[in-house]
Picture 1 (spheres, rainbow, N blue to C red):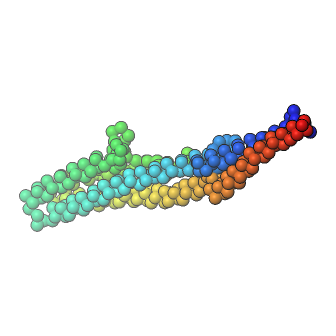
Picture 2 (cartoon, one colour):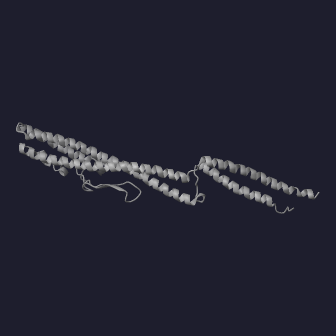
Length: 277
């Protein structure tokens, strides 16, 4: 029997130290809710989970971009809808001015009304913007309110574009002559201009509307992708509390048993003293 080195105690201590590390890891997982808290826990899993998290964050921002784009396009559409109503009103007044039963004084009054309505069309075009970006009129800095690109994904190519130029003002729709319809014949000529303007405006609205539908479809798709990516990350990164609690209880029991084993290994050495009696 050797007393210089207590091999049994050393073995029990080593096992207890290793078990304490495992117990500490289990406690960390239970307290953070994460199965992977550092690279050494699962280097490959951490790499995959981080890539998934980055992709989910990027797509989440794309959803926000899409919501902003949808709001922008909705503002443009509503503004042009009001302009369409004004054009309808102008057309009604031109029809009234074009008939021989309307006197010169009546035509003059109608001309004044039409002029004010044209000014309002220009005001709407000028004032319609989103975060300072002109939507349906010429911007002195950027030119015609035309092509707009919306980033709708985490790749450079994931873009939805409003391709058609939009200049929904009096000049852009070529209806300035309606404000000078001071005779029956001029009113008749202006009617043709107004019909063309309405066609142009409807084409602009159609382009905006189809782009908005495309954006909203993309938003729905992206939201599904974000949900699935977060679920995939959770499988890799998040702790299973039922499993980890069972593991913690197991390691806790093993730890207590290890402490008892160390005490027993130390007591065995005390039996040597009986040989000296």
